[in-house]
Length: 148
Image (cartoon, rainbow, N blue to C red; front, side, top):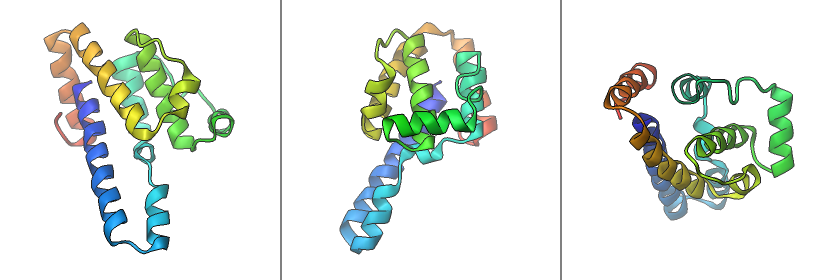
């Protein structure tokens, strides 16, 4: 879990640097492209599988069809990737007593969603053993190539 949070942290850092570069030295067209970037663009089948296997213990995103994801995205005016990310964060909040509904998360900015996930990650981390933390760290290194 800590690794997942660190990956998200790195993504946020990348996003912040990306936005600074875009705002300082980019033409209008380049700034438009920069605005299109979302941290949720980094959601991959590996990220989904890691969450479902190591945290949730059940399918949260992968049991949804492409059409279902598209429908969720359309309903909340978000990208398909963000819909997947919001599904994960919503599930994580439910598991850690976050008490926040899906539409509220879907309306949040990327930064607010990441802050929410980080907050809930601290709660989750307190609920697992040191052995489980070590196991998550090891598995995340195997999957993502970085140790968190």
